[in-house]
Length: 148
Image (cartoon, rainbow, N blue to C red; front, top):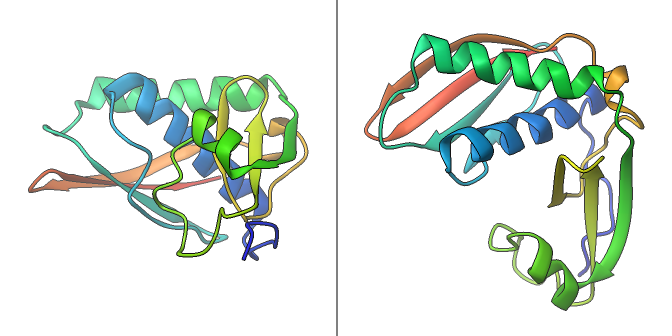
């Protein structure tokens, strides 16, 4: 099975999740979210972090995500071999059997690239305003709730 079908999600929220993931990786050196629940009204992502981010750091996350959205970057899809994809992105979260042939990569300008089967906007300017709602931290798991 290849990663070529689309998963039905709300495209603005799902695209915002990609930008949030890239921002968290850049600011905290963590991996992309290990668990995400993406919905139309509000969503959440979990990250493994050694400490809880400060309010100032979270303000910075929100600012950067909105800055990327405002750039109106193109959101594009490429299909590449699993071998090539493995040199560009982490494929460890793909379901068994996926990634044996072609892998679907979603790129957000030059800000983010990841393997994904979800639906996305065509440009980041279509997302709207990103807002962090709340968060909690327990035993190394940092959960962010957000909306667009």
